[in-house]
View (cartoon, rainbow, N blue to C red):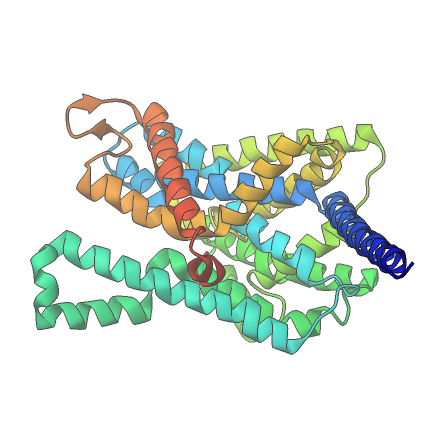
Length: 410
């Protein structure tokens, strides 16, 4: 009896043990299912059209820097007709930086999303500064050895030149400082981001003072109406109006398009897209004409605040929101989109170093490969674009495998 009792007790304990293991396993299954459901929920909430637009903009910025204004102006001075191809590439990619800024505003100005100063300063802005100085160091080091050789790094001249380049930063890194300024304004901008009337008022001031006023001023200069130009310029300068100028308007505009522009009519959207194409043709035609006849309007016409670029950027976001937003991407496509979107900022930071590597070290540019193979910029710009994009992606992909670098410099 005693032995049977002991056996009975042992059996029950085994059952209890099995039951506890089953419960543990069932909890693990439930947790896995919950994680999968949460992941699915996040995937459904994620705006893949915005990711696609970010990727598209990033690649267009690279293409823009492959063509670039300096090369275009060089061809114009040489009276080389190939400048037309380069001008078309530059005009086509003019939306790159504005759309990048608009996408930042799309997510940061949503008043329903939680906001803390701690997160803004310690995560968002800190990451921008660490990225700025990391890539400033990379550029400063690369530029020095490119000009004076690797052995020169042991000289005192290296320390001086490196520190100047490190503290000042390469020219293309201006974007980081500009977007940091926009981030610092987020707490104020969020106060009226849910008020459509105030948003329209802000954007109206931005377009008028930031785009139309410079257009009127430069048009008067072109027409050689000196007296009227002087009166207009003096009158505008005395306003000292700076509140809605520069890229902060794009930052606000991005959220406005995302939250307040919903065009259900396909006909209206098609008309908008046709207008965008016509806007691009007009913009490119003006650019080519003024390059040949009166480059003094170059600064405004080709700048990011040109009315042509503003229209181009806004309609492009509308297109991605309404048309790309309708697509149900496959799981494989989502993985590719997520990866490219994650690496897009890093590719922006990397691509100018890679461009310098191809141009100055490998001697591959828009016109030839090592002075051996020659081609027109019509083909040369896309060739160098593919090479730079590929190597930039590879570098960023490798860096992304290092956690601390992924967190602070990409």
